[in-house]
Image: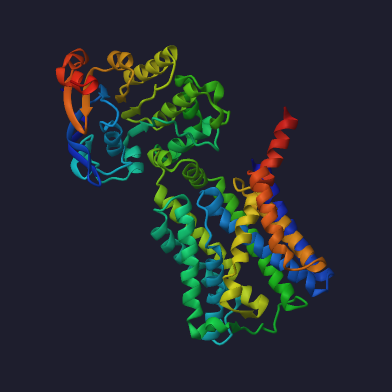
Length: 318
Length: 241
């Protein structure tokens, strides 16, 4: 147990070091752009999986939390005159989205199964409408944001942003891993398997589900907060894009939802393929690709890549 | 008789215009074995849903060990010591048999001192119930009778003082029925009061010290097993005029 614990943190440290080395070795900003997108996908996949995978509540509203995170940054940046440092924006976005997660969870978690999923979709539309009509943060026309011209010791702003996203993603993975192997995680799994039986076994199901929506919301907000600085122009259509929401669902499904590593594997795989295809073929083909992969995995390997790996290991062990 | 473990008073439950339970009262003494019978649709499962907290009754009160639990959510009742098993087994399918028992142990019987002993306690329960050799198997792959045993084991893990067993034997073979019956009797010898809902009359008659009969949401008879089955109202409820 102790060995596995240190192995995990060793990997985390190695990844951080590798990221720092990359910023020194690679000078083509395109790579950092691509890596940023992949990492953002990973963070969202990990966030989605806490509610969708561990707890079994499939949520179509991920993009709303992501967008609220992004718009929190835009609002604060404008209101305080472009002085707030990125960590403050990220922390505020996390807090705002955690609260929204809690509130939406409280209102909608009495719904089960597909009805919950529909409610989350409706919530996303409500938020999109609100933001489209709020002129201060750009309304439907969108908002520009100026990237600061300081970027620590890095060689460009995108390098720094990449490093920030790398740290955030690793933190999210660590949270998700700690969650699933705790008493709380077993309670969530019990809810996913059978909610009534969980409640009758002493699991406070409503409270646990609220913890789950709150953590999910906060992590989604964290993923969205640096987004305006990455794209420099945000409008409701891009922030609330269905593609963002679909990716957040498809990546954990493809990787496997029951284990914390599943969404990471799925996001790295799907995200990387998307980047390669965007460059070599076309950016529109991405959407088709995700759809096809999702259908293939749901029909052929519903447990995802992690499930396939487990099956393979079990067969070899026998 | 001693102070009852459970006292259900004048419980009424409606589903829309349908009256599922009407003014039902019953009590269970400490360590007592109570049989609850009645034709299909008579309200047995609704009543135990109200007792376990899966449903809230509209009128009346439920008192467990002197404490009013009428409006208490199910997970808190479980922590107090009310356990139930389900008619259709509801194992936590993604977990092993042992992990299934960890859930109630971690949540219902949880204190820091107990935390370290959870695996040992779970193994003890599994040994008592005859599932020890299946402890590390996936719960979704169990046979019917083992699934029923797991259902009971999970209900028992948190050391309840009242167990509500909802048709733990339906669909089992005669020897399997005896096996489950033995488990319930052994459990009762350790001081746990049991409400047993069952259609298998042989099992109910052998097990129960007292029987309550429900029909169309009302209690129509109560008493010693031999008297109850001779009661003309009970015969009418089961066989018609």
